[in-house]
Amino acid sequence: MNKLINKIFAVLLTVAFVSSLASAEELKVGYINTDKVFRDSNAAIAAQNKLQQEFSKREKDLVDMGNTLKSDAEKFDRDAMTMSETQRSIKQRQLMDQDRELQRKRQEFQEDVKNRKNEEFKVVLDKANKVIKQMAESEKYDVLLQQVAYINPKLDVTDKVIKALNAAK
Image 1 (cartoon, rainbow, N blue to C red):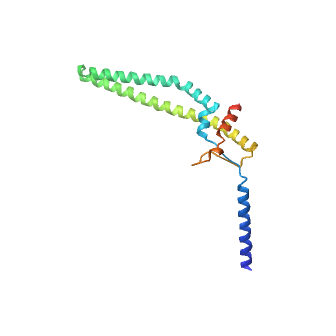
Image 2: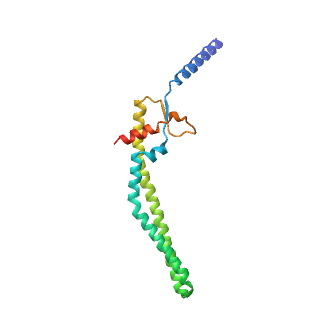
C-alpha cells in the first residue's frame, strides 16, 4: 500500500513540475534600472534642481569661509616670525577656532543635504513605484525586477517607466 501511495505522489509531483514549466513559458518579466530612473526622469531632475537651488547659497558661504581660513593661515605663516609669542599663540588659537567652526558647518551642511535629498527622492520613488505598479497591472507583468546581476536587454522596461513617470503629474 505504501509503495502505491509513493508512486501516486511521485506522479503528482511530476505532473506539477511539468505544468509549472509550461506556465513558466508564459511568465512576463521586465527589468527597471532604478539608477537611470533617478538620473533621467523629469521628477528626479526637478528634485535635483530644487536641492541645488536650496543649498547653493550655503555651499558658496562654506567655500568663502574656507578661502578666508586658507588666506588667514597663509598670512599667519608669512607673519609668524615677526609676531611675539603671545600674538602667535592668540592667532593660532583663532585659526584653530575658525577651522573647527568650518568643519562643524560643513558637517551640518552635509547632513542637511543628505536628509533633504532622501526626502526629495522618496517622493520620486513613491511616484515611480506607483507608475511601475500601474504598468505591471495594465501590461500584465508577472515580475518586474529592480536589481539583478545580469538581465537580457530586451527585458529592460526602464525607458517605458521614465516615459510614464514623466507623463504622470
